[in-house]
Length: 157
Image (cartoon, rainbow, N blue to C red; front, side, top):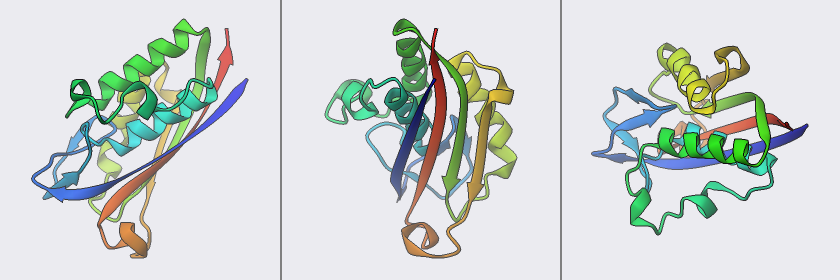
């Protein structure tokens, strides 16, 4: 068994779609980044890659490459899942926490869980997504950005 942790942060920007967990969420601003800036899927991808000692998403999907400009992060997560399988790993579970002040994402959590499970070929009951605010403190509390933390357990098959 191996455990991985992933953390990601993106600032908010006007004129961008807000995509979290592969879900388009109605909002006046979105997260800024080279890809679609899906903070949740990036943290999950990093947790999985770290658990398998395969580097991080920056190594596999560099933000200097036009190939990944504005790419859907579900494509990246599916690639990570295939890479782990190729290396002989099975994902046991994923537990993720979103940190953002607004908008509220509770109505979208089940869809996020389904998206992660589908990308990784897992059952939805092995994927947890939670969210919290930052109680108006720091860049998250000022609604300047969002963060996500993820942990996972994988095992060698």
